[in-house]
Amino acid sequence: MGAARHADLDLLRRLDARAVRSSVALVERLDAGDLGRPTPCAGWDLAALLGHLTAQHRGFAAAALGHGQDLAHWAVRPVGGDVPAVVADHRAAADEVIAAFTAVDAPDRPFALPEFTTERTVPAIQAIGFHLIDYVVHAWDLARTLGLSYDPDPELLDAALPIALAVPDGAARRAPGSSFRPGLPVADGAGSLDRILAMLGRAPDWRAPAR
Image (cartoon, rainbow, N blue to C red; front, side, top):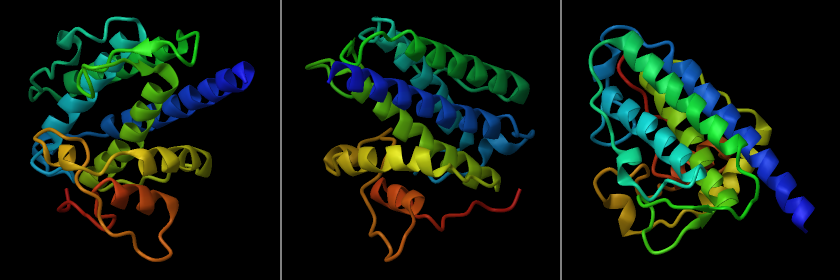
């Protein structure tokens, strides 16, 4: 049982790193003027989305290292208009969280995730799953915002789908700053990515205006 849990943890963080790197590759294709573009995240332009993504990387990295209870690690920093600096800051935060997750030595190591709950800690294996689903969906957000392709591999989607199914679809999704909106109907015959998107409040046919 213990060996299986450690194997599950190793697989999950490997897939999480894959999702994170996919999102970094998309961010690195930003051009001047892109930061004001609309995104599938209601009320967020691309600058706001990038501020959220970068802050979440740093918050989860702090949680993996035992410091997640400090809200300063989760603070969203202002995103300026210097695109190379924005891209570099996001890449650095992504490297931080991948390295921090690699250092986690047990599936049940407690993560303090105050943006999710202040009443309890979350086991590492569950917390990394939260991070993974965030970056599968947010990579799609980035791709659609920038008019780029996004085609996560089946192994990643197979891991992400049950996590998406487990995300509560309640009033919290309507709160300001929520990553996910209330679920949408899932079309008959929808593939795994479209199912994940719809369950987490994304319209799979959403498109941004042409760049």
